[in-house]
Amino acid sequence: MWRLARVLCAALLVGSMAAPAGALEAGTAVDPGDHDQAGAPEARAAEARHERGRRLYDGLCYFCHGYAGDARTLAATLLNPPPRDFTAPPELDAARVIAALRDGRPGSAMTSFGARLDDEAMAVLADYVVREFVQRRARRSRYHSVENGWPDHDRHAAAYPFADGRIGLDAPVEALDAGQRAGRALFLSACISCHDRSRQDDPGPAWQPRPLSYPRPGFEPGQHAVTASGQPLDAVSTPSIYARHDRAPVIPGLTRREREGEALFQANCAFCHGADATGRNWIGQFMEPPARDLTALSAAAKAPRHLRQVIRDGLVGTSMPAWREVFTRAQVEAVVAYLGRRLNPAR
Image 1 (cartoon, rainbow, N blue to C red):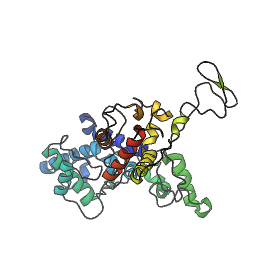
Image 2 (image 1 turned 180 degrees about the horizontal axis):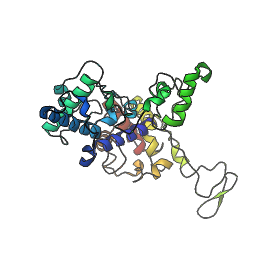
Image 3 (image 1 turned 90 degrees about the vertical axis):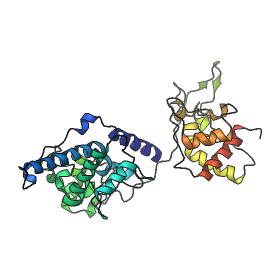
Image 4 (image 1 turned 135 degrees about the horizontal axis):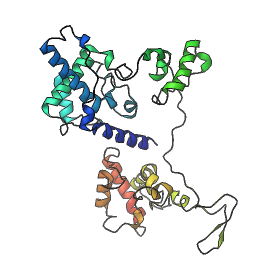
């Protein structure tokens, strides 16, 4: 299910980037005691500019980089490569931040904000990042602050090791001292709903990307199913209307490249399209729109050139994503070769 996790993560990222303009104007109040010359017009203007940068950052950047700029967020655990930790060396300057905002970072989740921020806004945001996280490392920016609605949060300090990964949540309880056991109990009762990706030394078996199939409505084990005409069917040997599509067809005489494509298809594509490529499995039929029945495509749609394009670029208006960043070109060609055999049995 790692792909679903990645898709969910991407959806949240888009949501944070698409925050309405009004949301970017909501921010924390200026602390007049934060600067010795807070009463001077220049200092007030500088602080107002800094707070504008804070509002932009909280509206656009915190989801990945965190309120403290240290990228210790849920999104960071799902992204590869992880977001930049602004507090870690090498130290950033404003020019590098502006370049990342303007151009994005190829090969990462950092996208260009050129369509959302003008040059002045990028400069304000870059100056905020450098001043707040590189120079000041201000605790005030951390999420669990009074300004963010967390007064006296340090009373939960015993739970911090379980939230930040210093102690694995599955560490043997008998190996913990009294304070750590109390912190673990506090974490499980008050923190885990947000810090749900805490460290585990033995996370257990990974989920397999295989859909479940269910019997037709009204069918229960021990009962006899019937055909549309009312003829009884054996309840044990008859597969459900979905499960039969989770079995890969046996295609004799596959070449080495076609076998590689078959393995890639079954591991990545069968989740939606079914092992038999019909899209009539449980997941495929309950998608909106349903997964395409590849075996029923027109001759033009089955052509290698078209299949190659759809696999690489995805299909607008459907759940079919672009695989060009997941598959290599050789792997795309292998899948196309396999589908050529699967969709054209006479070959």
